[in-house]
Image: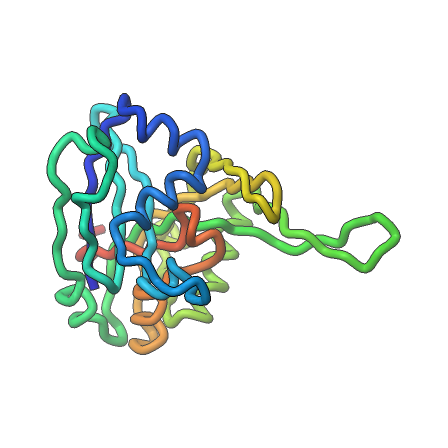
Length: 223
């Protein structure tokens, strides 16, 4: 597994094009990976997940995780402010164990199904707007993916949910795509090593091609 840090030039023509259409951003990232036969699912075959993070001073970094080694020389000229930084994710995977506590960040797409009132038995997904609903969604994902959110000293779940900038794009077969990501920052405790490792590798939730699903881990912070 590989984790890349890309320091983005927000004034570059390539970034300005990509930020206007998340499909273009997805294509730019995937340009770093070998082409596959048309029948293959390109992103999932390479295990690609990505996330945009704002850093101190207003800078922007893009984290990209993959099972295939990337070739960032294929990126458009001028997109990066400095060379890509690539490291192995294996040291993180090696310390996953039941009871292990991590600090984490997850950009996700919390949604729920609602019935469409048009006379037909149809349902659509709508974003969860309230932080309490978003955290409840994350807790349910923990039950599925082998982790729990511990309580803070105040007794509430030790996680914060904050809205991230909306992602929009145009998809030929689906029309306009809109994703309202939520950034979760907090602590988690591993309950099932195999399920949790799979979640780190494969991501959590929907919209994985659109900057959601990447779970980043760090040593737990002192309370």
